[in-house]
Every structure is written in structure tokens, then in C-alpha cells.
Length: 563
Ligand code: HEM
Image 1 (spheres, rainbow, N blue to C red):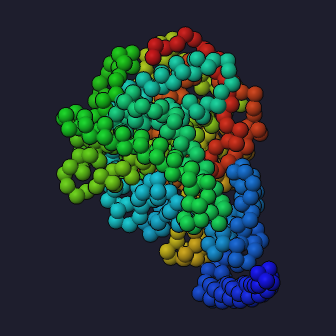
Image 2: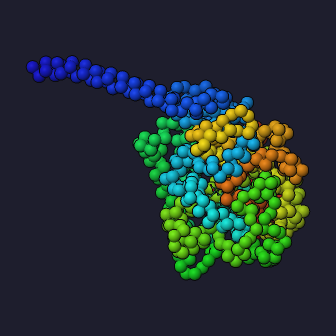
């Protein structure tokens, strides 16, 4: 009996279930069609503008979302190859129109504007990590914090960091010496060094007060970038509620704990010394790196506004870092000192905002320079004849002396500087910059309109490889940065640090630190690798990297400088 009842129930249930399912799917499909029709009608202008712009064919609703398949290197290669024949290219990522521009005249229109200043919605994914820090904030908040933070990276503040740049560069040399002869991924060493330098300079705390190494933090950041890149590439991972259900959502929670615990410790430690009346960095400066001439005297020899290209800016462009010192050396404070002082003076910045800015500077300040220095060293290894010229220049500046590098020395490193700029041209650590357009823009390069509401991507890596700007654009040629060549180029033909009101605030810091770090390494070693540039497999997981890492080995040139 019971069997009969059960069997008659199971006959009825599937029928009603399949009816309900059919109704559900019919409703879903009709709603999607209605939504699609509504979307096309309300986006008519956007669709008309997009129609004129070349780009790979996509599917209805999902657009080109399926093209972002495979490894980070494969995704980078697909996008790079799509864009190769065009100066402008569009793709659809679901309902979002993304337009890549690769002409310096168009880049100027976007980057120099004070209107097209808002970051694209893709930056939203950084929020759990960086909050509303300088990199992603907009409007009044961004303006006020930019005004506060930019002067803390003025050259007169940076000159005060030179001894610590030297001390940390020597510590890196000592670590590399232990690895001599072995093939290592030098990106790990550069990440550790750049994190520790940031802690001791901009943050003003000793790296020794941290119970985790700079490398643990840097590795957590690298994994975080992988997750963010995955969410950018895979459309279905964008909604937070889906993402949180995946293993990546759980991993992000663990990584954020590691990352935020370092920043919280940094702020706590800085507040403690601040309350004891101590200002400036508490990091130890060993006697060997003390610079005899006073920074004041050096400041007098060289203007505080040192010509654009030496500090990563195209000749002819200026930003809020290129100001003469209007407040006097004494009053300029390093980054975290100034934020704490401002918070204690009242309303300018809250504790949460300090945390967001510290997270932003810790990320932007280390990962970019770790990539830049790793590419530089790999390129030196791939071009031994160029490396010899850099070494010759360093020998002319320093002779046999183990003395630390001074600010004036960094201005003498003309050839090393050209190699560094050429590295940032061919392998810009931030390969693209994205903005959301609130108003439509008619481009300078051709009869194209970027419609309001689209995401515009300034493809720095594409601009840097244009034949009309750089003859033999794929060849590593430091002479691309000879003064006579840079003077002839479009201002926006070299923008590794972006340009305009939202340019990189760490541009001068990065150039000065990299010159001291890289010159210290090449005063001690020759760098070698079995790989050539053709073997580089690029991937753009937020910051440009190589899929295979940065394998090199070091050969000692002379005995160690005392660390
Ligand atoms: C080789 C090294 C570096 C490169 C290539 C680089 C590149 C860039 C680029 C292209 C931007 C604009 C990003 C965008 O609009 O999406 C940017 C912004 C920024 N960078 Fe850098 N950067 C470097 C080093 C640094 C350093 C050392 C710091 C801090 C110590 C720093 C702090 C920042 C900040 C805070 C922003 C946001 C500025 C704003 O929106 O107002 N960067 N950087």
C-alpha cells in the first residue's frame, strides 16, 4: 500500500516540478530579453560610438568575457595581440564597454584632465584591502589627501632617506652574497628589500620591530594581486556574494589578515615613539653609510626641482611634485609622521583613513619598484655589453671606494638612469591605467568618441612600444633616453608613472631609491642569466611580472662592502 502511495506521489512530483521549472526558465529568458532590449535602447549612444571602434568580436550579453581564459600570461598575450594592429580597441566585458587607447595625444586628453579623474569600477575590488586610500578614492576626499600626502615625497624629504637607502641596499647585497652562484628568483629579494626600505623611510619604523619579514608581507600581496586579477578576468567572480562562496574568497580573508596585521603594527609602533616626542625615522643608520657632507649643502648644489626625466617624468610635463620648496626643509615631514600629526591636530584625517593610506603606500610603494628592479636586473643579465657600460660608469664615479652613494652621485649615474628609464619603457610595472568617463570625449587621434559611462584604459605598454616614438621599439636601447631624443618625443610618449593630476606620488622616491639600490648591487656583482628577453613570458596581474619569475645568478666583483 505504502509503496503504491509513494509511487503515485513520485509520478506527480516530477510533473509539477518540471512545470515549475519551465515557467521559471521562460520567465528568466523573457526578463533577460526585456533587459537586453531596454539596455540597448538606453545605451544607444554608447553602442553607436562603440560600433566605429575596432575590436575582437564578442557574444551577446557576455561580450568578450570568454576571451579571458587560461593563465595570467595567456590572458595578457591574448589582449596584447588583439590590440597589436590598432591604436584604439574596444572589448565588451558583459555590459561594460572597455576602450583601450594607445596614442599619446589621446592619453594626454584623459590623463591631463581634471574632469576624467575617477578610477574605473574595476578598482572597487581593491576596497577590502586599500579602503578608500589615495589610489582609488575620488572627489573631495582624494583632493584633500593628495594635497596632504604629495609634499611628503618632496625631494627635500627624500634626501633625508639617502643613508637608509644605502644601509638597506648593503643589507640586500649581503643577502645576495649568500646566494652567489645559485640561480634565484631575484623578485623575492627585491620585494623584501623594497618593503623594508619603505618601513624604515616613509613609515619611519625599524624593520627589526616587525616579527614577520618583509618577504612574508610581499608574498601575501602577490597572492592578493593574483586573486584580484582573477576577479578582473572572470566576470562571474565579480559579485561579492559569489566570490565569498569560493575558495578564493576564503583565501582573501587570510591574506588580508597578514597584510593588515603588518600595517596595524606599523601604525602602533609609530604612535608609541611619537607619543615619546620622537620624530622622523627610528631606524638605525650604521656608521659606514653616514654621509659626511650635510644634506643642506647638497641641497644647495642642486635645485629641489630636478629635471623631469631623471625622476621619471617626460620633459615638459610638471605635476604637484615639481614644486620649489616653499615651506623650508625643517617643516617638511615624512609620510607617516605627517599623517599622525594631522590626525592629532583635528579633522584632516581619521585613524581609519591613516590605515587606508598606509596600506596604499605599502602596496604601491613596494610592488612596483620590486618589479622595476627585477626587470632591470634581468635586462642587465640579458645584455652583458650594456651591463659593462653601467659598471664602467659606476667605477668612474666611485673608483675603488666603498663609500655610500650620495644624492649628487645619483645625478652622475646618467647611463644607469637611461637603462632604468628604458626598462620602465619596455616593461612598465603598471602596464595600463583605467578611468571611468562621466562625459563623452572626442579623441585627438581620429574620428572616435569615447562615450560617457565607458571604461577607458590608457595602454601605457602599447604607447611605449610605438614605432613612431621609438625606432626599433622592441629593442632594449638605453639611448632612447638621450636628451636629444627625449626632447623630440611627444610628452605623453613616456608615462610609466602616469602623468597629470593623478600621477604617481612616489615617482621621485622610486627613482632615487632604485638608483641607490641597483648601483649598490652592480658595484658588488655582475648579474647573469641563461634566459634572453625572448624568453620573458609577461603577465599583467595588476603589476607587470614574468610567469617564469626572474631567474638570475650573481658573480662577485669585489669583496663585500661592510653591511
Ligand atoms: C617604478 C615604480 C613605480 C611605478 C612604475 C608607479 C606607477 C604608478 C602609476 C602608473 C600610477 C597611476 C595609477 C593609476 O592611475 O591607476 C601610480 C599611482 C600611485 N603611486 Fe606609483 N609607481 C611607482 C612607485 C611608487 C612608490 C614608490 C610610491 C610610494 C612610495 C607610489 C605611490 C603611488 C600612489 C599613492 C598612487 C596614487 C596617486 C593618486 O591617485 O593620486 N608609487 N603609480
